[in-house]
Length: 156
Image 1 (spheres, rainbow, N blue to C red):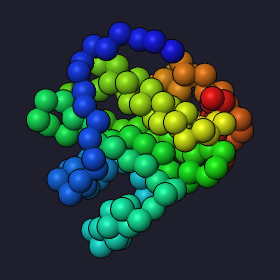
Image 2 (image 1 turned 180 degrees about the horizontal axis):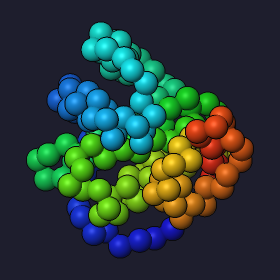
Image 3 (image 1 turned 30 degrees about the horizontal axis):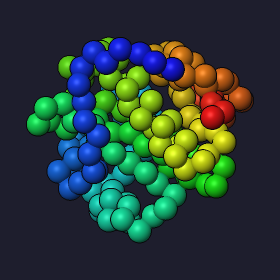
Image 4 (image 1 turned 60 degrees about the vertical axis):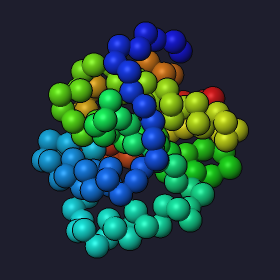
């Protein structure tokens, strides 16, 4: 899928600076709800962050606009055949500007370099924008996960 870049963004290492920023983003009530982020504390998140350097089942990149981190994207639960995609924009002033499309394209491209056969996403039923974005890339509903979420899959 090709689309016109509206805002230039850069994908960079998910470092300590962005980790600390993500703690703020993912505790924002609206972002927390839309990303279905569970309650946690700093110690648990710090252990997760410290574990990233040794994990082959997790790929995460920070997303920057100029000199400002604005979000994160990647794949988790990576196996030899698939992985679960995630995309979130923490800086709300960038919502609705097609940056999520660029982020999801980056994730799909990475999955292709790994030779995955598919990528899946758990999407909240109420998050219509995420559903529409995933659908644009060929993700199709596979099943209900529970009363709140559906599993969508894109075959590469």
